[in-house]
Amino acid sequence: MPLGSHALRKEDLGSFFDEYYPRLYNYIYYKTLDHAVAEDIVGDVMVRVAKSYASFDPRKGSLDDWAFRIARNLLFSYFRRRRDTVSIDAVGDAAGAVTIEDEVSDPLDERGTLVREALALLTEEEREIVFLRFWGELSNKDVAKRLGMNASTVSTKLSRAIAKIRKAFPNIEFA
Image 1 (tube, one colour):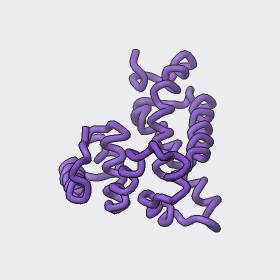
Image 2: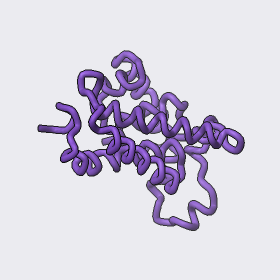
Image 3: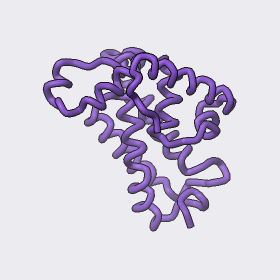
Image 4: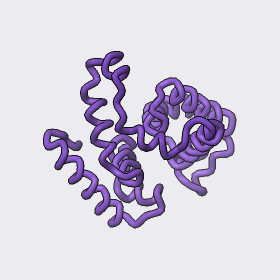
């Protein structure tokens, strides 16, 4: 049986980790822009899933929603603890910030730099939609559900966000 169609069983945990670790890591990294923090938080997500796998109930939502809700809650806790030194708005604005250290430490990461610059053009809501659609590999309908929007609204906002990026970076391709 595929993941998410039944209560999560102990034997499903390996498949869950294989399927969800990269997606959760990308989501958390996008929010924190810190590889070490993303690894720590996604590790905490996996521990929580392992400890509470028996409580997953597909009648209350999908496995995807459950896992990402745990990730969001851990992110909120992380930002709450760091409130004294970093605001959530500053982290969102940092999505486009490229420092000299970034360029020197990873000179082959031109694509990552381009992505950060492109995302910096967008509002937080547009970044979230683009991230969920392309990195999260969700349909517009699923993005809408996750963000509490209408699917046509997501489609319109996604089109406008892509148009902004294409205007500034005509060579960027969207899969």
